[in-house]
Image (cartoon, rainbow, N blue to C red):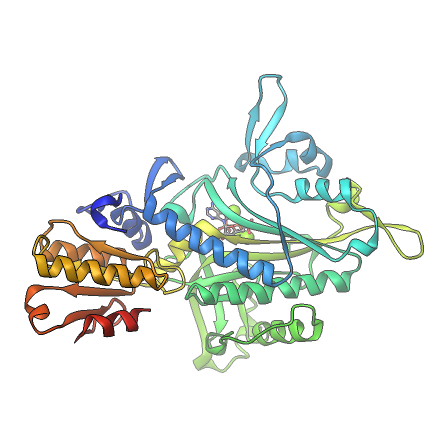
Amino acid sequence: MRLSRYFLPVLKETPAEAQIVSHRYMLRAGMIKQQAAGIYSWLPLGYKVLRRIEQIVHEEQQRAGHIPLLMPTLQPADLWRESGRYDDYGEEMLRITDRHERDMLYGPTNEEMITDIFRSHVESYKQLPMTLYHIQWKFRDEVRPRFGVMRGREFLMKDGYNFDLTYEDAMHAYNRHMVSYLRTYERMGLQAIPMRADSGPIGGDDTHEFLVLASTGESEVFYDSAITDLKFGDRVVNYDDRAECAAIVKEWTTPYARTDETHDVALFHDIPVERQKTSRGIEVGQIFYFGTKYSEPMGATVVTADGSRVPVHMGSHGIGVSRLLGAIIEASHDDKGIIWPEGVTPFHCGIVNLKQGNGDTDAACDAIYAALKAKGLDPLYDDTDERAGAKFATQDLIGLPWRITVGPRGLANGKVELTSRRTGESEEMSAEAAIARVA
Ligand code: ATP
Ligand code: MG
Ligand code: MG
Ligand code: MG
């Protein structure tokens, strides 16, 4: 992309309404525009990152054997009357009446609708196990929408639902989700720690939240620092292997890690004192086993091998796709701007022409641009007439991992400059060498 033909409405001033760094940088980098409290347009740069995050989520869900579909944002109230949640959900639910006076709602989550799909089409235990998921906009009329996309009212969520014959099968689905989430967050350059969360009145060890440590997080968290040493890395997982998934879950759930809701002071104090950590965290996902809570009242049953009919065991599993942009920026930035992890960066590399209109620098930049594109990369070439200082400030703000700077003086010696956004280190080298390093 050539910057002169792109739409990147960068702001010079820091917007007064933004209280935390990710919100400030997303506004300043022209990634989002607020349209109403907690409702945003995704401008091209923000949209690009959102799509990359979505793509990683899709890949990891499908790797785990989960099936994508797409449910609508608007739902009929009657489904929610069946589960009893229409009255229970409260003011976070946006309720709408259509022209025929039918009660509708903008979905805050989809347990009822997916259960309806399942009961309409699945009859036999032989069709299990099955996990269906989608990535779709949700609406929750949050009391205090704030921090930009971190606590929006309209937000993008991946929500998946498993249907299983037995408790043991459902626990395998639970474990599969935990493993796939660990991979997913790590690919985004994030460390998200699974923490025992509040399972409500049902009790049991059946829900975990994934938290990214950040001072601006809304949850208070307590953990054993040993858990921050765990890395998923590039291990290959057989998602059908129950023991293997269970072992990974055990590895990540053995060190103490809990939110304030489930914190147990006595257990915490059993950890060596130097490893007892307290921090704040951003909830970027949650997995949940809830058994027959929806399948029973809504009649989602299957016929078993012996001919009897039983309600299926279910769980639901969410990732805050749009919130992740904020969480990644909170975890990866400096005082000049965003530092995108390679996995989610909107462009692979920036090219800065220090003397636009100069025949040599223009030709060199065009050649680098073409070479990067030929390698399947997506560079952002700043071919505008801005002065060098402003071009560098924009590059730092939007946080691409690499910048190739081309000026007449370097070119005279056959050199360009390659700068790493993360380390800030620059190195002079030939254009070919720079292209090879970026690719
Ligand atoms: P929170 O505690 O932050 O209100 P939640 O527990 O109500 O979140 P879940 O129902 O678990 O949210 O939804 C799954 C994921 O969706 C959350 O882990 C979070 O990452 C994301 N999410 C929830 N509410 C919002 C919101 N208002 N804006 C952006 N993302 C959200
Ligand atoms: Mg909530
Ligand atoms: Mg929560
Ligand atoms: Mg939650």
